[in-house]
Length: 269
Image (cartoon, rainbow, N blue to C red; front, top):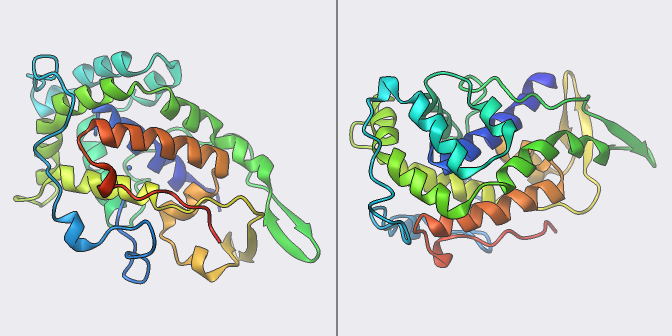
């Protein structure tokens, strides 16, 4: 259980760093979910205008004039312009940030865990459950372990994120192509990441789970069929998830994506 719990903190960190412009955190739903209400079709995804982020001052967003191999300090400097939260600075002490983020975003965009790219920000306290009426449920007190991640994400300056992304975009693209995508577009992968987060359902009701050897599974088969990242986002709790989704939507719009391209998060029924 502890190993799988690390997925969510890595995913959250990836998105924070990526959308900061440090690395600009999600894979489309499987075919059975991709076209649900509020979703987006493959045809719509092809219509992204990846070259026209809006409301970004060209002079203030000139690409970083540093090589990929020596970009860490420049990236950390950008973080100070985006958020004054000291927790973010601690998260960014790792090395090779651009490459780590490109690899992590690519992993999540394909439904894989990014835990091999980021091993920091481990939630404090144990994962808890409680039993009521013979059923096992997630204990809401566990949600507080992710308050820090949600608060840091909420502290991000939207316009500053857009400028930083424009500054880091060339480096991100270079790192992304090093992964084996010579013609790949990191911006498209970022878009899929945003969609993944916004498509994660918000659960206000108690979440029933069942024990499976070393971990817990969602008892609701529709929830268990979500990818790993979304299931761990659910474990953040509805308030933290909604805080992240609202801020993420603001940042996505600042990056030039349109309302029509962004699904509206919906409560789970």
